[in-house]
Image (cartoon, rainbow, N blue to C red; front, side):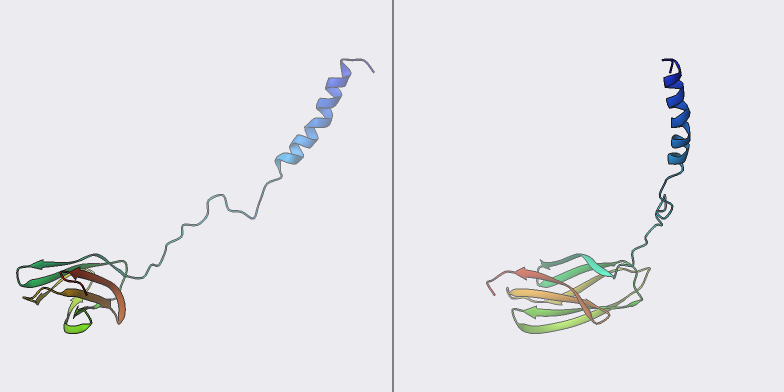
Length: 129
């Protein structure tokens, strides 16, 4: 076989193989996967408990999708319950501020709940619990 025919023969044999392999691809994997929209539960963010004179102030924001309802706070001094309050929240109002008169120093906690589920606890320790 002449030397110049050998590369031509290889090219002729390689052409059908390259055309055949070009058609091999994964047909069951989408090129762009569908966008996943997470359905996260509501959560309390930016919660803080601060003292301002004789007043304890809790500020909290509810984020995420939620049905309108009451954000409740239960106040504790160490293990003793000292009060509770609630504010109605909806899509237009997501932030609530609660105040409690507490002239004495203590180990204060505020437990925030929304829709009957405890969401967050914030603490202010002025004395050891």
